[in-house]
Image 1 (cartoon, rainbow, N blue to C red):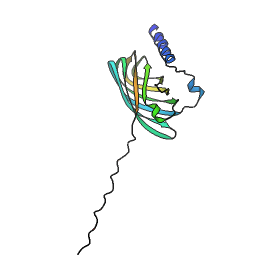
Image 2 (spheres, rainbow, N blue to C red):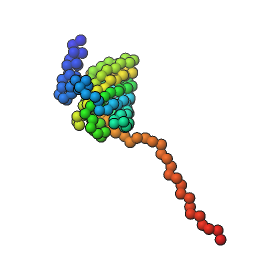
Image 3 (tube, rainbow, N blue to C red):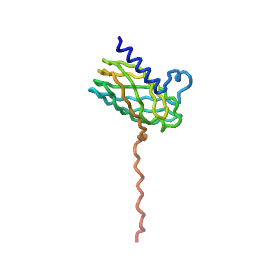
Image 4 (cartoon, rainbow, N blue to C red):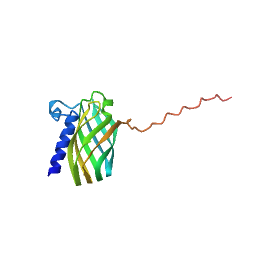
Length: 166
């Protein structure tokens, strides 16, 4: 019981140090929405990797997520969706987001997180995890925008100039 209370206090302190206020979500409309999924594996140190889509100004932008976590053991699949605040241009989404967390997943679990990058972009995420994982630390993850993948269309072949028959 004492450990859970200390973890909640630590998370609240970390969010306050980053300047994140949970009231923002109710104060204004989000600038964008995002969703992503990925996998997390760990044995003391953990690694996360995944991909997702940002919906901003009527357009969709693909991105990748990768990061490290401390004090984690297990493997899980993560799906998350959320709102994005203080996003002025798409490029501002990219960057490093720091998190402090604690949790235990057996089968399926979930939760929420408030994260902020160095450009001031704030993410309010709701996630679902499936697997077996125990986490008592923090870490960071990076979001990198990727080019939209579209099927390559072959360039039309230009016919050779016809030579008149003699």
